[in-house]
Amino acid sequence: MLGLVLVAGVAVTALAAPLIATHDPGVIDAMRRLEGPSRDHLLGTDNLGRDMLSRLIHGSRYSLGTVALSTLLIMGIGVLVGTVAGYYGGLIDDILMRVVDALLAFPSLLLALAIAGTLGPGLTSVIAGVVTVWWAGYARVVRGMVLAMRETGFVASARSLGGTDGHIILHHILPNVVPSVVILATIEMGELILAVAGLGFLGLGAQSPAPEWGTMVSDARSFLLSAPQLMIYPGIAISLSVIGFNLLGDGLRDVLDPRARVEMPGR
Amino acid sequence: MPNRIASFVSRRALHLIPVWLGVSLLAFSMANLAPGDPAEIMLLRQMGQAPDAESVARIRGDLGLDRPFAVRYIRWLVKAVRGDLGLSYRTGTPVLRVLADRLPATLQLAVAAWLLSLVMAIPLGVIAAVSRDSTGDNFARVIALLGTSIPSFVLAYVLILAFAVTFRLLPVAGYDGWRYLVLPVLTLGIGEAAALARLTRANMLEVLEQDYVRTATAKGVPRHMVLVRHALRNALNPIVTLAGVRIGRLLGGAAIVETIFARPGIGKAIVDSIHDRDYPVIQGFVLFTGTVFLIANLLVDLSYAWLDPRVRLADTTKEARGSA
Image 1 (cartoon, one colour):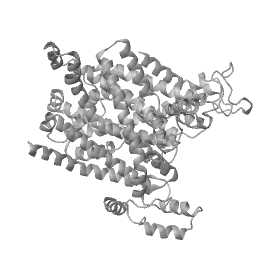
Image 2 (cartoon, one colour; image 1 turned 45 degrees about the vertical axis):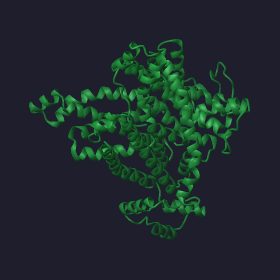
Image 3 (cartoon, chains in turn red, blue; image 1 turned 30 degrees about the horizontal axis):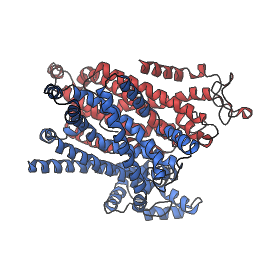
Image 4 (cartoon, chains in turn brown, green; image 1 turned 90 degrees about the vertical axis):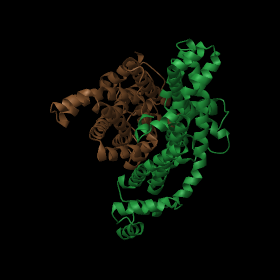
């Protein structure tokens, strides 16, 4: 429940950022650098006099936006590849699953790091890196579900009624696969937020002055001793979002499927 | 029986060949993902100024960059199998040498963090499961949730502020003796321990509901014997299976932790070579990490099959890996 509240809170913040934020996150005020909390600046200002709270609020768009877009792509590719491999089997299944195995043969973060880094800094590279690595686990899970489903009565009866492959996949298989995939994505979301923030921290994601949370932590390193709050605030923002998604994921898992826990094969 | 095990081992090993080829292809493509011409980048690195077209063309010929992708890949692979991963663009050192130099720092960190996480997580998970829904359980769960949710790079600076700045107990960064290992190991180990504790608790809860635990209790076996002999042993099996995966996670986490604490390990080397666009090093390290990870998973599979006869008997084709 707390998870749902946190996730909803962060999501609303991201959607309504321009309405909530009291200041423009990019406006520099050299006279008011590193101020403490005040009426005007609820969380104080950063090393360039920018309003900390407004930067955090706008940062949710970068951090969560990246993760949301990545998740959609990951689910799309994972479901597509997993369904094709599981439904058609044979050579195409063998080839696709070897690709999946090869991707899962790496520590996810390290491979995403290498790909994003090689493509050059920027949010697009981060999304490309994360998506290239993360879809593989989904494809394997989906393939397993489709394989099991292919043997069940309702697929066989749909086929004996003359249903085409496309019809069976679209109307019988996907409606059964997608809900589980959404749950899986919720459970994995926390991990993905950490990965994206980690890449941002390493300087591969959004570049400053963009208020992406990982980038903000990285920028705050020079002020660790004089103004640790510059690092603590975005750190708390990341942690709260991850806690929210982890709690929500745990809750969904308990409510919908208390015994068979969906575990990712990799990571 | 030995025959069965031998065929299980060889089947698993054979299965690895196409996967490893995929890993190597991925590693090799790294340099080709990058915007820009590797020859130009290499010359720029070495001369510090934009090279003229003639020397770029010469280097392209020397490096074989004018050949098709497939030819370059096969050449690179054949050399890599012989232990020649090329030379670093930046320093001219053989990549294998760089790897060998960087490996100890990462191994120390990963192994120590892994041990620390086991020592912290298993008691925590077991105690939480045994006293389910008590204050202790709730406390342990909150700690574990925080541990998995706080980014390592934030935890690292909190630890630095506490132990290195405020109390001046430990050095911040560097690589010179065990004192430099403490904070990185804590950073990496705490997150890992939290994830493992959650897993241990969940597995213990599941096992404690099994019939054989009830039977043992009904027979009058002392509680601590039931917990250790019957429950914990079975609850730990999936954790052993995940050990290979977890070690891979630690390697990934090491990239961030080593960068923060300036430890000259593999993770930091990858981050540095990315910033330097030192492609041979990136390729070599990606290939190395993937290979190590594959071997670790193979060993874990084998040890699991050794522990649990059902796995090797039921294993018909590749299905077991997916369900493991």
